[in-house]
Length: 323
Ligand code: BTN
Image 1 (cartoon, rainbow, N blue to C red):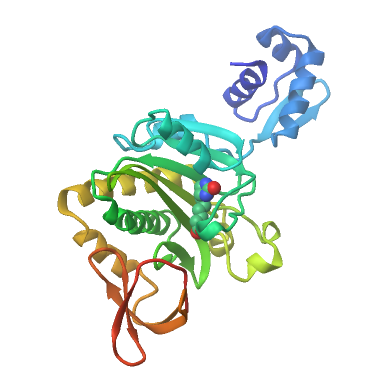
Image 2 (image 1 turned 45 degrees about the vertical axis):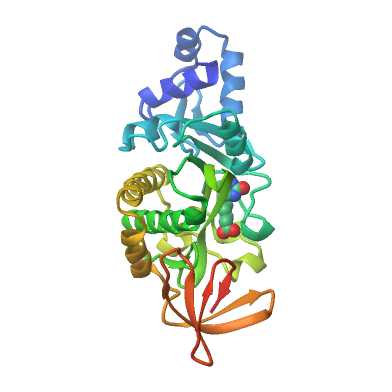
């Protein structure tokens, strides 16, 4: 543990009480000037200290961080999230997870970043990932399924995420096909699933999940505000990111085991129950232009079955639907 970490630990033990400069410098065996420099460094990292002459310092507020110790304490999974690579900042957790998978990292390995500078969304879009406000994470999966079933896995992840968000926040999150999560029509979460395969079998799948947990109105551009929102904006209070991440990983592990033992059937039922896309008018931009119809159900591969205006049925395997 470096001096700053020791300093934080000491203040935490004091539970908000003042600690004199003398006690700090003798406990940490460094000069008072060095203590002051570390306090300033922590302040610039988001810690709030109160300083009173002759009393010393007290820790008033810690920055909200996804701390590994808290995750480890709360998490009830066997495999998922048991090996975490944590970063303050990354270009994209997807890129790092691909790198780790290529180096042989095991299934369930998780990459978390407090901030992404080049967060990636589906279809080449950017993903807004400001510091400390969301859950920006990618996980390595090694599903034992033929490659053609990989889209089912993405739907499974959406179900796990939707159930976790509902449990933790009680907000009415719903799934927009294939795997966007919405509250009142605005996006709160996205999933990016990237498979690397050999001989039609996935070697590994990198599942990237972005959850806009604690972004405020000011974190969104006017353009984004019209289509996106956060759990904090919708619920009116700060969301415990550690709790949400742990519940998500637990839901995911349970559904993943169910998927391997019983196939897509039970996941399809859960997805349909949480969907906000079914039994309504949907549009999709395809290579033949804009296609419109009524979304009826999912087929067994995870494709969306849509009834066109002439009454015929068609299947959509990918894309972004609009209502
Ligand atoms: C989408 O809805 O377009 C998918 C968004 C996926 C964003 C997540 S954030 C963590 C991971 N790292 C990335 O660069 N993207 C995914």
